[in-house]
Length: 372
Image (cartoon, rainbow, N blue to C red; front, side, top):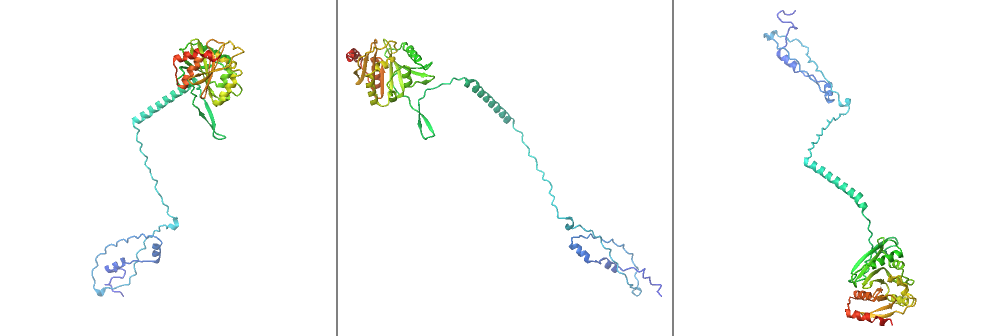
């Protein structure tokens, strides 16, 4: 029977030492370790503090009775499982959008704007002026054709280049005057009438006036001139002469007297041609140079020679007052004159020699002796 003085086992309180031992008990299980290895974080809850026990009246050790106590277990903390990466898939890197700041444009200075506007106005004005000049002025300018003698030198069977040759120099210090006549039509009548009209114009005495003849701005060739005069040269005669020629007037008291100069290619051939021509019909074939409507007599004397400044001249008197047919070959020139005085002036210019007036008077006085 129990002692009434001893408290019951149920009423017995634990000593402070026993309480502390109970609070420091840590329970580890294999499941907790596995959760830590698997990445599960345990959220531990702190145990609530036990109320402070009331002071116990000490009793004698003899009355103490240690009854067996059942172990007090600390409640298991709640475990919250955090889903592992294997259950939610690979981690996704989320990059926030990068905000690019917009550039701040500076306002264009006013003087630059004004400069651009001014330049545009100037360009517009210049283009307008060019268009006006192109349409209304240039289109109305007359087309001029300048006579240029060209020869073509083949370089290869396909390509050829044109080279311009210098004009032939027929005089040294002459002529005293030079004019150009453009024919209204390419006919004998137009040429002869034009030359006769020009011969009526008075010029200073003993002067040389060169007449350059063109048609539509292009100079006549020697062959074209012979055909339009007309002068009847022997066959293949002109093949020994250049295309260029010189036609001039010698002014004397009785009027203008024509002069014709050709450039020779082969001097010896030219002398032989003239020697053969004068023996046949030279005077009649070239009579158009006299610019006269009267015809030469059917029977004419033979040509005679005289020397002027050492140069031989072939001479023929005809039935025209103060006119005669003269020709001479000097260097590479064939000279025809319709008066002896004209031949004197031309040879002095080409040779560069001059004679006295007394020499000329004596020569003129003795010309009749040359043709006897």
